[in-house]
Image 1 (cartoon, one colour):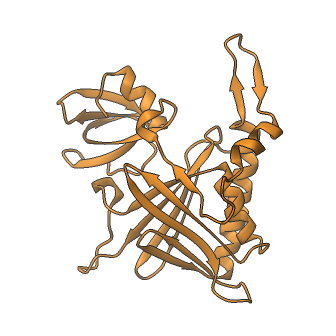
Image 2: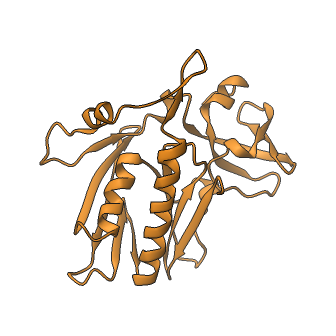
Length: 236
């Protein structure tokens, strides 16, 4: 069983990547890019494209659509006062083609792509249920959250309204922040990154949650675990 998963679905003008950085993380990322008018593709490493984070609840709801139990599912993500609507729905009653909308990005998956998407997402969810739902107590004992408590947390106040998912990444040490930097060196397991305050820090690749261009002297955006930034006094 591997720790990371990444699968991309590309068409003529839009690309969608499903990314799970670790089976112990209770979330996944969807990364969207478009082809530019000049024929080149947007580069997430330059801050282009759109990346959103989905939690376990959302994975379950997306799978419900992929398993053809529901015709569609939609939600809103709110991050830094910017709301992004996401939607998964079937093109028609035959449920052979899946339409995915993430903000201004849209992607259609054919039958085979949808099946790959469904099987991968189901596998990732199974992994995360096993490895991402265990918390450590100060005594070193592990506890699993009560299903009843989880159910109460996940109930919607208004069943008729779309749920709003708060992506408070910048306030949670256990999650990530987007930060600009330049790669000054690289080893098999780490990148030497110079940040905007001219501070150079070796960052383990295992805590870098985004794709990046390994070329030196290119300013680009990285999604990095908050704890490592705080440990090295890198402002985020």
